[in-house]
Amino acid sequence: METSKLTVRLPTKDLQFAKAYAKNHGISLTELIDRYFEHLQQSTQGQLHPEVQKITGLIPQGVDIRDEYLEYIQGKHS
Image (cartoon, rainbow, N blue to C red; front, top):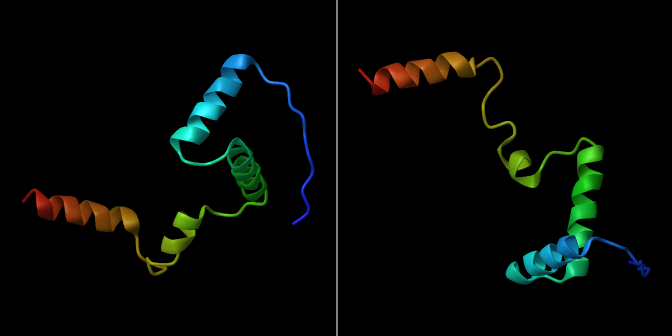
């Protein structure tokens, strides 16, 4: 992957927050920014979050989720 250098001007408090956040999560500031841009690209392309993709399709079509939930709640409190 080709990389380029970028200079960004931010308010001091925002930069301090970003540095602290990255440090607390064990990543570099560059990686934090890269992950954020990747997230933006996915959200603008209509892609689902990987955790949502994992569970997509687990409930068969034709199942009325609302009715199933109401039956569960009624059975639980009977």
